[in-house]
Image 1 (cartoon, helix red, strand yellow):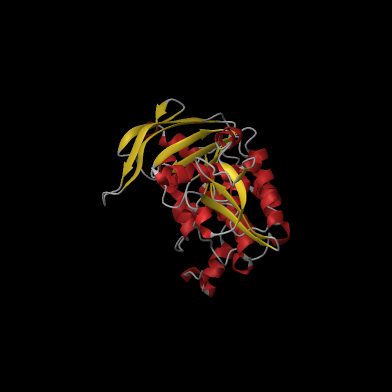
Image 2 (cartoon, one colour):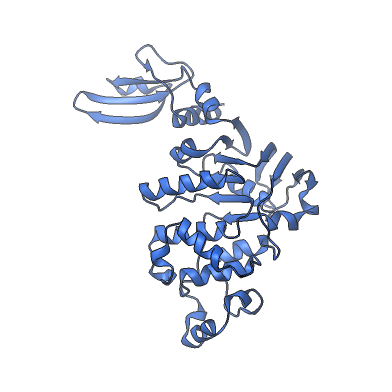
Length: 336
């Protein structure tokens, strides 16, 4: 991403100023990540505290007339790591925008520790760390400089130790002085995670945080999110079911703007018992009435895995996985 400030004279201006003053004196256009976050940051963020959010009969209809959410009721309380699942267009992004006060519901209310969100918006923003799905970074800054800039926006004083801690947490110590434009996609994603963690906010929202990360990095960050949630409220929106199964103690499934399931991973898996099975495909007609979740070509033939309300006799029942249970839930909703 190229910004006008990367010209030589503006590079000199950047070098000449302390980044702790950038939140009042910056003269360059903000990247998308800054635009997404600046309205959520508060200059007096403090340490972690217990948080409870209550979503009460919330609906959201956009000016175009599209209803994104319909009558949501949901309680979120720390400490917890909550997985938010749902197909594209289900309403997950709208829900997250409501939770960070980027939107206000057209019906219903959101309470923060028992008080209406619009009355304590500053408290919510002071408690928030947020990684949106789509974000941009200042390409000509180093990783440390960018995090120093974000620390200034968050009102963190003497942030050097905090910056070192988050750089270490996301395994970017070797790239701390590298310009962001030189980073790979996965490394840039780690910078985004680092800025969300900066300042130890008690409420964290990560939207597709492991996109672009290799399997080893995904495992590292799953463990990091789990440790973070030991004393905080963490909401993890993802399409990677394995990430949810590995670390989340609660799951929320949204489909067509409504909450279809809330509970533990074990409860969702139990709901699919007797509805998952495998069979050797002899002809395509066997797939009728089934939702095929996997097809593997082998020397013996094609082995299929499927979910259904009623399994036909030729399907051998199997223990469901979380992915099976999620797909079974969504397929039932789609059929209604």
